[in-house]
Length: 298
Image (cartoon, rainbow, N blue to C red; front, side, top):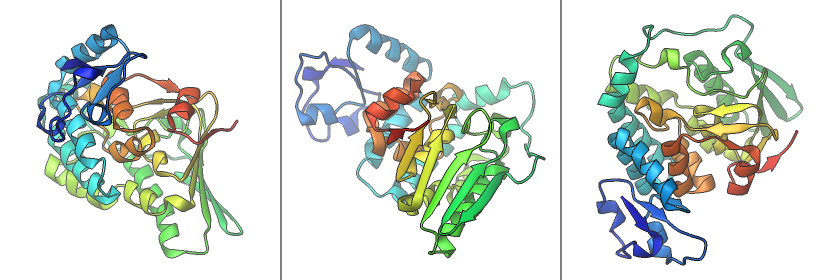
């Protein structure tokens, strides 16, 4: 649905009753009320941009609707509740037509990916600070099952050792992380089991719980979970050549590593929806302007 910003109804529950994403066109000289702003899912500055986004949504309307519904309902609830809702919605999409079509179009069946060049995360402690360097550059530091489990182990240190005042996370290689390893998509026996696994193993819960003690520094590509998880950090820095992207919609999915919560609470649900639905990349300068990162540090 495309509307101008000043045409958006001001009824408090209007947006929750909409069964498609609401795209508002708001030009610079237009003023809209706070309620009109709240009753939109995405805001763009011109009609061509709105139509381009609507055309993209029409190619996969179900994932688009579930994305904006999750962003709507998780805006003002706890992180833990939000992660639960995100996982349930993600699991629903895993059984959906768009994702199954993408899975069927891959040349190879799902497979586990493991590195052989040392530990997946290198740890060093200096007094009360722990330095963690992601060490799978041969896989562009993808969030494989191996890497997910290693992250959980590192974050558990913050649970058991209160003498650690700060955990600094960075990565080796050309980029911080390209996100979930696509070759491992489809390994779960069914969507219900996948949800159960995420509830037990998603690092987002520990990232969020210990956020005040976590500083992530990013560089190169930060794609999907490669930005969803770091966005929980209290302090998030990036090299000026870093770029960010949320590509899950291309697979018939939505962010499922916590991004609907972590990113939306940094840049708002409108810009989060725009990033996901458009698939666009943003650079470090834009990320800083939006509040996705806290500083550019080379």
